[in-house]
Length: 342
Image (cartoon, rainbow, N blue to C red; front, side, top):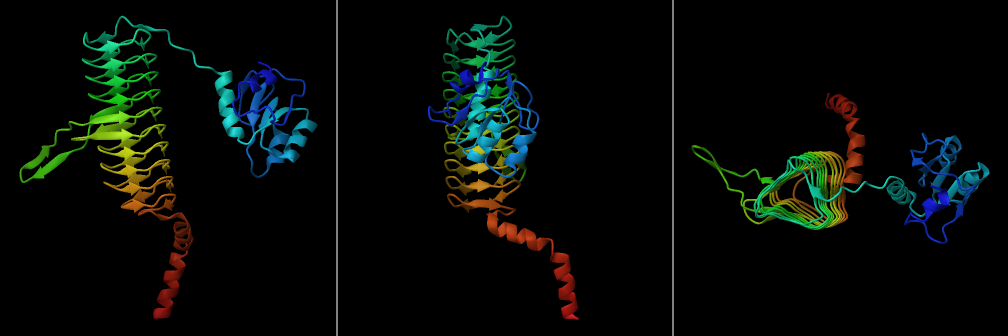
């Protein structure tokens, strides 16, 4: 489509957004700035070396930051552009316009197995070898890709999409617009055992998992149900691949959990919490609203709202940076100490 037409489909573009159409090129795709070529859209974010990055790019059109110098450079190069407050957001919206998803047609594959007591809306798509258990409810607009298994009494609200070979265990409830990626497991038994003199006694896991509206769960991630009560993931929370959420965990709205995060049972996360890759959260830890933990942090106890933490055990990020700088000097400091002791 023409660049001018694409701009009408980018929500971040306003009527007053600065722009230069430069012949209104045909846009056939999008690519990273350093790899973009003719017919492709790219974007620049505010930061260093913008001029050099722009000069080296072969893109046909650009989403630029609100920087008049960069805009003039793009104009001088004969490139089409629009300037946005958040070019990355605009690029995400442009990708959606350039590559709209192909809707799945309503219907149930002949190989699917659906219990007679299940309720499935007329426009639902159920792929090959799907299974929907007794008493389950699948609302309008849901898509179940091949091999999806819904155990008994699972509830899917409108517009959920469950990708191939994902499994939802008994009683799991998903709000509207949830996405569960391939091989994810929702509502499996939590890791609950009681130690006795003769060995471990299994604690029955009778609770359920609830995903509120708009939650997305990545490939291979697991969210366990508790012995009683709920494991609840707040609305709009995004969970990466290979994340484990233990039984009885509660997260607030809009959290982001990166790959290989592990959250032990009973932990509580506030709204907007961000956990970077491989963060570990201990039993019953409490993390305040909008707190951030950097990669491989280990969280015990309580993290205050808005705090940024790093390290194991997690400490304030600024203190951790100072400690890291000292760590590299420890051999020299130890040698000096031994000399002083002599």
